[in-house]
Length: 58
Image (cartoon, rainbow, N blue to C red; front, side, top):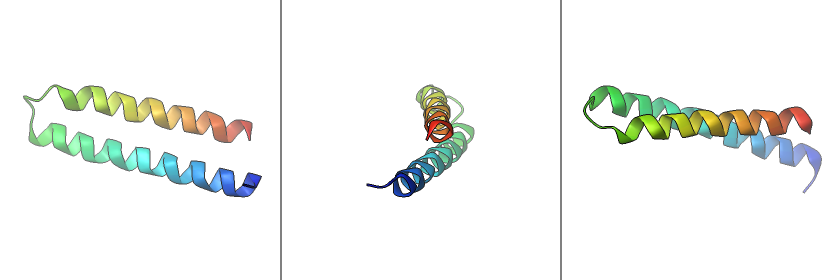
């Protein structure tokens, strides 16, 4: 796998993590009593940060 292909795939993964966070926030807003969504939202944010860090170093 080449460097450009790797960057492209990391960008896709970062975009998917962002979209997952969006849907999880909608789920949390629709079900305010559920506690599991908050931890998953935090994980999606952390994953985006990790993927962004990888992109900066490539």
